[in-house]
Image (tube, rainbow, N blue to C red; front, side):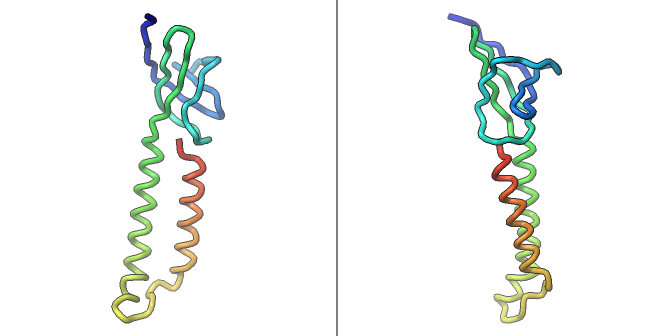
Length: 108
């Protein structure tokens, strides 16, 4: 049985780096296209890279925080019987939707 080694790694444009050096023949076990940090597992000849999507999670939390602000300035006052108070409510929601779409495409 081969011993499994684990290395901190980076992935950019489908190329995996360990200690700044390119590692050939690595299977990338993620769906996104964005640059990422993660781990490369080496077991005999088999090399697999797994992203650790910390930056993606931070972006998701930022989007949720932004959504909360948009909703609290627009939808909540409307539910109280008043008008949406933010004049740019629709534009803000559209922009947030585009950010979420881009993040989804880039997620690791």
